[in-house]
Amino acid sequence: MPSTDLLLTFNAGSSTVKIGIFAIEGAEARRIGKGVIDFRAEPLSLDLTEGARTFEVPLKAKVTEDLRDIVDETFALLADHFDMTAVRGAGHRVVHGGDRFTKAAALDEAAIDAIEALTPLAPLHQPQALRFIRALRHFKPQLAQTASFDTAFHATQEDLVRRLAIPRALHEQGIKRYGFHGLSYKFISRELRREAPRAAKAVVAHLGSGASLCALDQGVSRDCSMGFSALDGIPMATRPGWLDPGVILHLAGEKKQSFKEIEDLLYHRSGLLGVSGISADTRELLKDDRQEAREAIDLFTLRIAGEIGRMAATLDGIDAVVFTAGIGEHQPEIRAGVAKRLSWLGLSIDPEANAANDFTISTRESRIAAHVVATDEEQIIADEALSILRSD
Image (tube, rainbow, N blue to C red):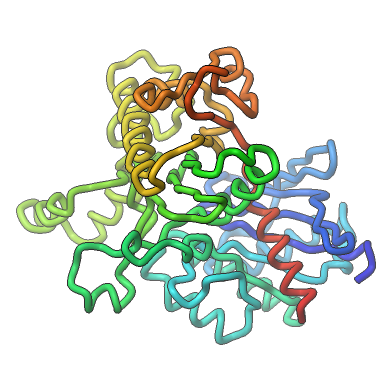
């Protein structure tokens, strides 16, 4: 492929899509632009970055079930800044790959159908990725497309770690712990091998609107706080994290709530928003003096620290804690709150390094290291897509 060839990535969340534009340079994919569409905004716009320049470009297309108009117009707008005739492939983030997809895959009709069959396991994210895959397939039928799976990185976990204490027949039917945010953890694993090779046993905290932790041993996933679904683990913006299943039985039985009501509670009305009753955004909660805001933050850091302790047991020791994603990379107060609860592990944070979001924020005297690493899921999607394109 000539060096002018381009590769696109689509990282679809439940309400946004991040679009990466990469130049193919030999065996490397180098980011040259990015775009974001927030489907909650009114009116819609494409927030575009090209080099050092940023643009907010209005979108005329409306959000429809198939997203075809959005994809068509987005390509047209990108063509004002990039040579879209040079696009040779598109890679997509897909949250759930189940047991079938343990690595990135080329997308043909059979693969797309298999991804759709996993929708009940990721009802918020899987449909959005499928819409973009199919819209792009309609717009450019001959364009090669690939999928990178968040669950695939965790396929290295032992069966014992992935098993739930339920009848074995249900485990064999796929009701087990899968783990998520795998693309982020794969990128962090790669960065740690280069920048902090001594961090052989590390617990990575991916803290964003969705949040989870991963236990890495020599860069390999051994445990994840998220399990069967993206509801599990630590509290998130609007999701509760770990929850006694008896609560669900109580809501369905005694409170006579419907499936839809409970689903809405778990995905949209719990977590930081539910505890505080104020906001799902840690930035807003940190600025708020009310007790409810403080309690939400304290619960968040308590659960993160507790999960790090549990993962230290999985790893049989710990060398480093790593913070990443929006909250993990940019909010020193949250990192300090977690570190304070981990002083029993010998973790000591340097306040100045922490305030500056430095790579290493632990003190020289700390028995374990603490790092801040910016994640890049789109880079992993691009790298995996390029690998598949080159193998065809």
